[in-house]
Structure formats: C-alpha cells, structure tokens
Image (tube, rainbow over all chains, first blue to last red; front, side, top):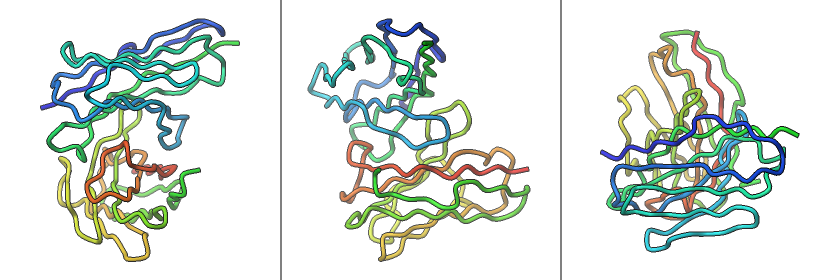
Length: 113
Length: 115
C-alpha cells in the first residue's frame, strides 16, 4: 500500500532564503507526482506536475524533481517571499488506480519578512 | 478561480446527526471527486462519481455516500456523524471519466465541525 510522507512538517525561514521541501513515497509505480499549495482553510492550487517518465519541472521560482527509484521528490523554492507562506502538499497517484490519489501530510511553510 | 463552488463554507453538527455538503462542478465536467482533509493531514480520497454513478471509492465506511446530478451539482452525505468526521471536505471536478488530480479542479472546501 502506497505511503507518502513529507519532511519537514513545518519550516520557518527568513525572506530571501532558498529552501527545499521533501516528499517520499514507498511504491515507485506512480502515475505522476504533483505538488500543490494550500492556504489556510482553502482548496488546493496545483503548482507543478511531473509525469512518471520525467525527472523535473520548473515554473518561475519553483523547481520540482522526481526520482522514482529512490521514491523521492523535492520542491525547490528560490528567493522565498512572505507570500509563499502556505502548506505544500505532494500527491502520488498509483499507476494502476490513479483516481485513488494518495496525498502527503504537507509541509507548513512560514516566510518571515 | 476554478469554477468549482461548495456550500456551505462552514457547518457545525452534533454527534449522531446527518449532514449534506454540496458541490457545483465546472460546466462540462462529468466527474466529481470528494476528499476529506483532517487538520494537519493531507486530503484523503472518499469517492469519485461519473455521470451519476460511483466509479471509485477509498477506504471510507458506507455512511459516507454521494449523489451526482445531471446539472453538474453533487452532494456528499454523511450519516451518524462521529467526532472524527470533523474536517475540511473538498470536491474536485474533471472532464475525464476516471480522474487523477492532474485533471481535477478543486473547490474551496466546506469546514465541518462535529461536537
């Protein structure tokens, strides 16, 4: 059974720092790997999607990598800003039942001005 | 703005009661999924409906049930509420019959508190 974990659970950094969020999964047979942002009490906003055959995706200050063999994905945020403060979730749908998505518990990020 | 709306925004119920949560999908999206997100956790998949039929279910008991209507609206019903049902409930719509999160548009959620 797929398990998705995220480290750290919470992170507080000063504005301008570069940071890395980690997502680990136990079963490498994933359909894709997706990173989301969630503001308190709100829905999910998709940030980056990495197909299972890809190694990384970039969007602006965000870069996500995928290493299926080690069961890891990282989200790199460059030059963090207070507006980046939110919870970041990764999702790893199983390849053979990709509607039954497994989410990680999230990393709560606080960027201090 | 995803075009997916949910109502109500917040709801308070007592243990043992029944609750109905509503979702309005983006026009043209025939698939709706529901997720439960407890505080400090990631969302958990409850079930998915396509054209008014359930076509996928997560590890939730039968007291969690759903309905989907031809006008792109849907409901999540929970009977015999328990304290652990307190959570943010998210719906997501998709134009694909079997939808993963990469094709889903998420609503803002309904916060349910069970006392």
